[in-house]
Image 1 (cartoon, rainbow, N blue to C red):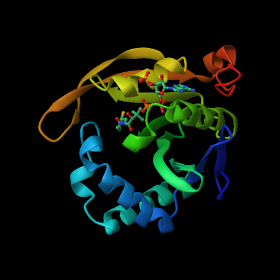
Image 2 (image 1 turned 90 degrees about the vertical axis):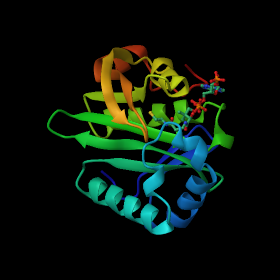
Image 3 (image 1 turned 60 degrees about the vertical axis):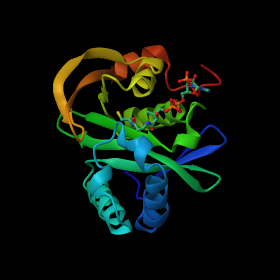
Length: 193
Ligand SMILES: CC(C)(COP(=O)(O)OP(=O)(O)OC[C@H]1O[C@@H](n2cnc3c(N)ncnc32)[C@H](O)[C@@H]1OP(=O)(O)O)[C@@H](O)C(=O)NCCC(=O)NCCS
């Protein structure tokens, strides 16, 4: 893996590896979107200070150095609008597990679908993954629409997969194998597919 990971998403957006000096901007974006993100992400209550975001970024950089993850900022004109990445890479089985979030103001434009498409392309080509997995809470329809748009196959439902503040939620699991990705030509940018 390159240490200066940078990936274009169409002509307007870029994915670049999160760095420690992103922590103040990323924390401010998290804080501004706290109640909206809290509906589906379990970590908002443990990210209350910029130091918490610094700790998170440090962990992602260690994972990246060990080839066990890759978390990127999604940037529009240099500003962070969300994150996407392989939260976990299982080297033994060559599987990448994708996670993502967008600022509320950045939703509804296809940014995350396009970002995932670019990341998946990178995962299957440069990282030589065999399989990419996305797990979404069953009620999270916007999130579930992303793997479906990208040709993933529904694998099943895991009951009580995640504790979300006051209750367990089930996860729908979606997966895409490298052979299906090649057949479906999912690597084409959205304006050419
Ligand atoms: C999940 C999340 C990233 C989805 O955001 P999103 O904006 O719906 O996803 P995209 O950026 O791919 O955009 C898709 C939307 O843009 C529209 N769109 C416009 N241009 C598009 C294009 N070129 N390609 C795809 N969709 C496009 C789609 O129709 C869709 O809108 P719709 O839901 O009204 O039909 C966002 O809701 C979020 O961050 N939620 C909180 C955190 C979270 O749930 N994370 C996931 C945990 S599993």
